[in-house]
Amino acid sequence: MIAAPVVRRLVTLTAVASLALMGVTSSPSLARESARDVAIRAADPNAGPLITIVSLRKQKLRVFDLNGEVTSSRVSSGQPGFDTPTGVFSLLEKNVYHQSNIYAGAEMPFMQRLTWSGIALHAGHVPGYRASHGCIRLPYSFAKSLFDVTKLGGRVVVAQDETQPLPFDHPKLFRPLPQSTPAAPQPMAQAGTRVASNDIAIGTNATGGLSEFPRLFGVTPALAEAVKSFQAPSAKPATRLEADRAVRERLSRAETDLKVIESVRKAATEVAKAAVQASAAANARLATLRKDGDQVQAGLRAAEAKLAAAEQAFEAFIRSPHPRGSATEFAVLQDTEADLEDGVLNATLSVDAARVGVARNELAFAETQAAAVTSDTTRARALTNVQKAVVDLKSAQLAMVEVKRDIVRRSKPISVLISLKSSRIYVRQGFEPVLEAPISVSQPIDRVGTHVLTAMRFSQSNADTFEWRLVTAQMPPLTSDAVAQASRKSRQREADSAPMPASAAAMIAASALDAVVIPQDILDTISERATPGSSLILTDRELKANENGPNTEFVLLTR
Image (cartoon, rainbow, N blue to C red; front, side, top):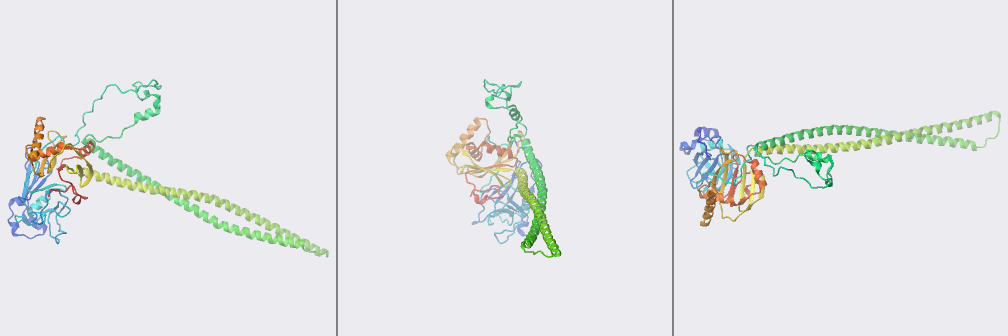
């Protein structure tokens, strides 16, 4: 039920002020603008979103909210050969100062883009007839006033004839999640289900719990405790409060995960630093031992060479003939022999000492080499852990970004488009795709045209439903059979005590809704995200990919 009209504030901006803001000089056409062109009533914040409707035949723009018409203005649309397309649009971009990149930098003040291919609302010359290159020109002051009250994503319908929003309701229109917790379902039976068995486990509890399961199933007390403490995965939210809480919990989990993973990365980095230092020290020690090993090996070779020389000298002396001479000569020979023996002994001791040094060096080298291998392995593992932690951190950061992005997306109205021609449903929110899936149509229906249904606000009589408005962007060519089919649906609905609008457009829209069958999981997703301002587009046309790329809600051309 529509609330009593509220007093609306009149915002009046003079043409001179508007032109001064834009840096545009005055013109005779501006002087002829009527008071209607320089004034726009501020929309009641409780009256739902604004719906802008342009009639090309009447060259008129009208803005509506739940309470009716907010304002209107004359326009100038595309001249012959540059016809303005009709269809369902949303405001994709707003720019106070904009220049056309198609028509030699032509100025387009207070531009509000409808398509990425060049169609927009903007201030310009409004001579009273079609004169643009496809855009919809508005009087300067009105363009400024309209720019101030519209929002990105706002609905704009461009049609040949005049149309206006009509109250509409239908059982198949999607509903928001309930505001409060629904009544808990009653159990199907008072007694719990029992498992028949002639072999009951010992230790049956007093209330007849899991300990009564048969041994055949292998249920141990530990498993029973685990099953009793098991928490099932959280189901989809049943109320708007639960949905909000779930979003907050998701953000909290993402923040916690990010902090934990950041701590893990820092700890892994510290471990890796220590491992790198230990590995570097071990390898430096190994290099020193390798250098020392070369020196002791050289010392051993020198000692062995001295020993060989001493042995050769001693052997040569022994083998040489020494004729007996005087006592003095004999004493000299004995001294020489003793010296040679001492030389061999000393050389042997030097060789032994050198060999001990080599052995010690080899042992130290082996131990250090093992330590270096261990350090290198630890370093490699630590660096791998750091790399993994960095990857996990990036994933957590991306998850955080996605959570925040989803929170922003969920704050915007959801838009649903049902194409009866392709039997598909498209759901977008905040200019981003949510899902696309096939649907079924329960019965063949004739062409239905294109209709836009907007959830203006929560119903004042039932906060778990919306108040809807229907705007027909294009009527199908009605045949007598189509009218009869819609009338039969209307009579059946009246027989079921469900209210049915009397207009042909409403009957056709209702008939189309009657035939559409949407999977329950898709309905659940829509209900979870539905807020006032959400919309449903019913059309017998296909959604063209060339106008519906990124950063677009829906652009549905009807001509």
